[in-house]
Length: 126
Image (cartoon, rainbow, N blue to C red; front, side, top):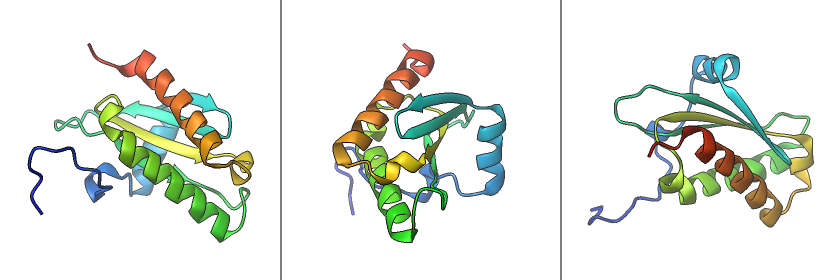
């Protein structure tokens, strides 16, 4: 499918953190941002293409598989829609807290927006 100059709203493999070592690097060296039911860990990735990549962690403390997968889907959707507005060249790991299980879409969206505002303050390049 051709792009025709429009922004792509996909969640490709290139923008995912997939390896345990990538998650651990962000957890060990990253900056923490707390936002309601989410914890965001951020680390510049130093990649030449300047991609911002996303990793998600939703533990069994949050709920059963249905709840965990719903939270993952919602966070992926927020990333997919707002990827163009994020600072470039970062690795992000969002960790859902147990309170995310009761979070409706607007609350999760507010928590995401709060974390992104902090990202902008710290990592936005002029």
